[in-house]
Image 1 (cartoon, helix red, strand yellow):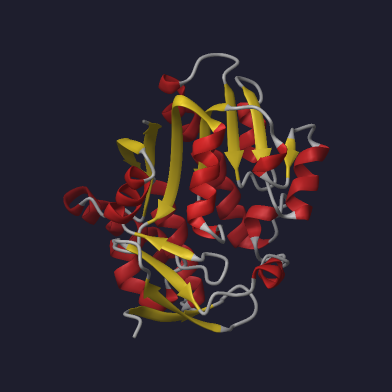
Image 2 (cartoon, one colour):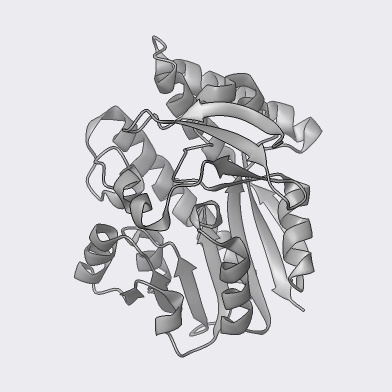
Length: 276
């Protein structure tokens, strides 16, 4: 019998119910039932799925795009100490190409984006993007997964591919929601960080570190993503159909960050690993 974390649903469109249950991997949960691979793209084909939509429509989109702009600047600062000019970098799950576009000015950048619409948006910007990692014959100095690993169908296969495609001593950067955060506990089934069934995997800090170290990637450091708590709390308030959802989301996002300063359980974190 599977040990259940909670029952939630797809708030972006289908309203289908799913369970979050602990997987066979330590500290990692999964979405159950897992949709068939060929059916997954249907859950992304919604104008409400903002990360694939380059145009802001409504307040949620405006908040998302504003926070994304701030985060892109922070991301560049975080990775700068590990890279030299013209290093080869890969943005896995590059969406409509907002971060990849920034990378393109500093490094030899590549993207992987399975979604046809998001990929075509990136290609229209002149970015180098393909649908699958196997299409690249080069190796990379750094690979980024900004909230992408939770979407992959087979995490074992994906991490093994990264191991083959990254240079010796190369850096793997993984940003993930944290299912033990204050806001995850507060909002429970309404927590936007679950985002089922697009998120197939759900992580704790010890879960992602243990999994990657078993795959021969040495944990280097972690950083909190403060803005994520604000946005996730805002979305969670929207899912609850709260009045003044933006005000409440900002308030509880700040509370989540303040609480995490003591506990370490931030809403989202970014982890750095070096190939060993």
